[in-house]
Length: 142
Image (cartoon, rainbow, N blue to C red):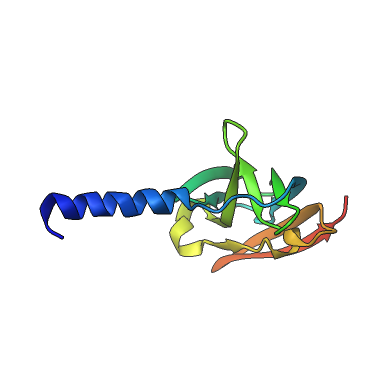
């Protein structure tokens, strides 16, 4: 393809891919992710990475503070979602946190695996910076 034909072909491919975005399977069950900052003097910056290259700033979390995120979990496939401003569930790819002052060098994924289990309704992740972010979690059915 050359010139305009190539550009139209690329546009058609993009439209097909955009229409093939994954849907949230089944009814959504309410679940909560809590991120606790166990750092004594450093704030955490957390970013929720959503599908379609969308990110949402969640925080900052002050030293000793916490952030609670109300999420949805797909009943059929355990996909996790965060509602956008219009209330539409957006699929979560991952949650990344790090020190606010040096985020790029200290950031790491917060594991959401335990929140996908059917019996889990709440996951509390206690996080510290030791070179990079490290979190330990406590899952509960409450």
